[in-house]
Image 1 (cartoon, rainbow, N blue to C red):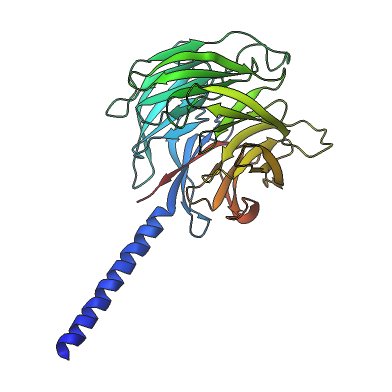
Image 2 (cartoon, rainbow, N blue to C red):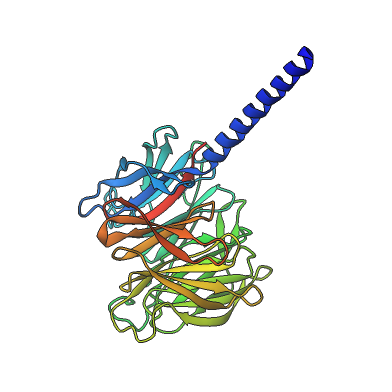
Length: 387
């Protein structure tokens, strides 16, 4: 009896330990550090950071993680060891270019230690990303109207660029489209192609990407042209890789393309507005994202100050409006979905807030929550899992 009692007690102890370990692991997986890119022409000093609990939706205290000028867009490598930021400026190191800053990420504190600053190869860099292998950093220079690719070395620093393309041309909006403006650069899901929306020329560029050496070659055809004055800004790719969604900043529309991964060819399927019927005020769209299940698409409106939520038809990728929800602030420049799929964090640039929305797991609809954190001039939000 004593032996049986001890065995039962030992079993209960082991189960308790296993339960606690599983609970801690689950909690760790749902805890993140949020890094926020900003413009530093007013109250901001650089990149900010705070903790986010995805179980409760609660935000932690905001701290300055790195003092650096205009870190308007950020990217974190897969290991979480390094953070890359564009410095959206027009002069760096005596040249008419912006910069890319490389930071070592102090995982325990969230502090970012500057390792390197290099020229972005063009003025006013607006977007930065890593390819799917994590071996290359890709940069789109808005004011310079060009793109560049840099290799990532073993210590996180960047080597000499492996690719560069300078654009030419213009379009019908004389104020915004008098010159090329590369606004985003990302690889396809399979890492074989690179896409670049050019707001100034109303084109979406398509390149073949060689992940062995970081080179780019124009695809055939090398671009698709959209309606004059549309102003392509950002895009999102369906998890299936079969559809690409391009948001047009100036026309406040989303274009749905079918995509052939074998050839890199795009075919336009649909164009849909992000605005309410009869809306007549000034509006520009900003960010676009597809949820992990490929069922819902989100787009931010600046002017209407809302996020438009669309259901995705799984067969042809077409969109139908589900909802349009106010972001609770002004000029929602960027937003992100957390990895659990439970939350959307919206960065309201002109009201200095990041507002949290709950995501309905069944239909993707958004509900505002009381969780709001103040960050000066937020322009980009990225999440890093804490373990």
